[in-house]
Image (cartoon, rainbow, N blue to C red; front, side, top):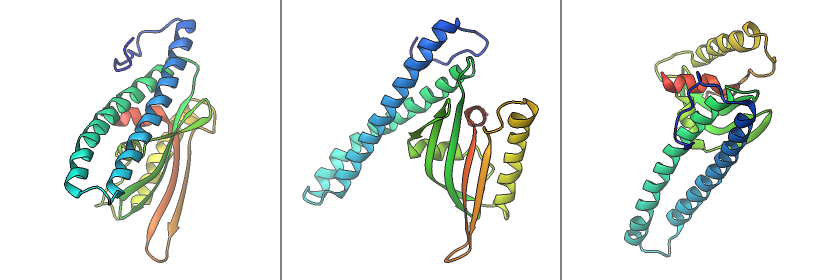
Length: 200
């Protein structure tokens, strides 16, 4: 099965086949994450290299950025597909985001994928994309309250209504008073929440 193909949630795989496919895709996901990080480091190193003429540097960076964007798009699709596959079996896939926001404008600092309780870093670009699923806008005068209401609805859905494990949902919000007013949050939810948000 090609990694870019979407798994149809209505088609159940045999348990043994599902396990093989799940861990194969998990290893591929980790490899893609490492390759993206390497690409980011290379681009950043070239941008900071002052010994290379600016024109030559820009000509080298341009194609690398284009390739990186294509690789990230493929990674995102693969992640969505992986989470869809996890929903078919006995594995738990969660996502946690660490971010800050001022007047509703969020900034992602870290994103992690938790597979059966084991965290793995996701590209920050993916974290930014996942943040778009949250009800945080620049027009909202009380973004922290909107985030709290969203979280409570998700907690009700996953931790309470489904009578599942009670550690799948968590939210921490800290308010910074000085030197500027801002909120810092750490949000942990089933990956399904974000995948559904992206699909809408």
